[in-house]
Image: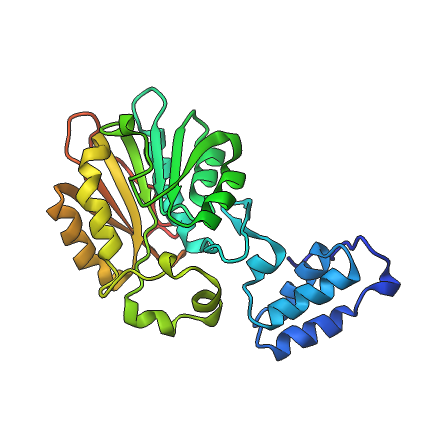
Length: 289
């Protein structure tokens, strides 16, 4: 974002970059200079730039204003009202990619529950360097429409609650089950930054009283859908690890916790006990921890 922006309209009609920075800074944007450059490069007309700056100054997430988010080296389309993929979730993608590379020969079946914009599935398709049979689902129609654009012809995106819309013939065949479930405790949702609580769907944020309600629903049904030796992967907070690990073990899955200070991320990788896959070496913390 530090590159000099290229504008599709004449410099004489372009609002001063300094003026845009001043407006954003006054609105509390910490990275006002970088955001101003991005908005100038994204706008196609002076009127559009003025509108985009106004929306950002009013508190809309930058990703909703420009219509995309950078994730795992990709430009992911993010429509207004759709959950914005977090950069820390790239660490979850790294773990899933490592497992794909160690799946026995064949076309791994990957399912992305609570897929949101489809960022995880799109990233896996781009980095797996192997054929993948990808399915994704979300209960939010806006997210589903967005995910279908991001996944394009590389996978199937379905609308519905968790496993409900998946084809029944996937039972017992899923090698990698991604579940980027909401895990913010209900009472902490009002404490989230306004960009999240006012502009992202509550269903993508609120994880119930202790933040683990949706995870419990996923783990309760995961053993029926996973292939022998298949893996369930999800992100959680550090303080929720004991509860999340207990939930996974209660469903008959064997969990391991992987953390990264670099990404400020905690991921739990849970394997369905079976004969097909043995222990695997997950992608390490980028800083060697």
